[in-house]
Image (cartoon, rainbow, N blue to C red; front, side, top):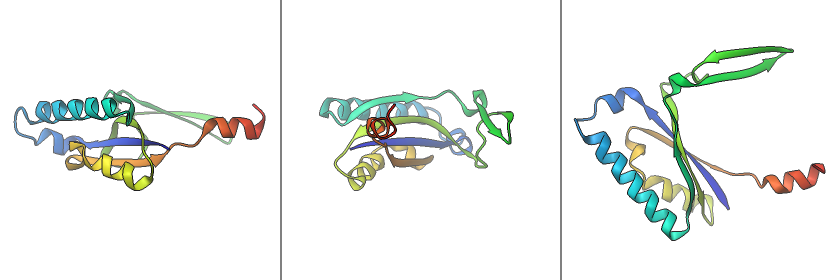
Length: 124
C-alpha cells in the first residue's frame, strides 16, 4: 500500500530553533530519506516552497475564487511530502515518527487511493 506523509511545519517553532539546528534537522531528514529509499520504502520525497508562495483556487456556485497562500485556518503549513510504500497504516505511522519534523509541526499520514482502480471503475 502507498501512503502520503504530508509534513506540516510551524514557522514560529522553526524560527525559535537555535542557529544551525534547522540545517542539522534537514541533514537528518535527507539522510533518513536516503535510507528509506535504499530499503525500497520511500518512493518520492519533495520539499515545497513556503506557503506564502501558494494560491488556493476554488469554484463555488460557478464563481472562481483565488486566495493567496494556503486556505486552511492554521499556523502549520504544508512544507513537503514523502510518498512511501508500507504494509499497513500502523507501519506508515511508525515511519512518519522517524522524521524530525514531528517536533516543529506534524505529519499527516494518509493512504493513497488506487487511482487505476478508480479509472477502471469509471471507464476512463
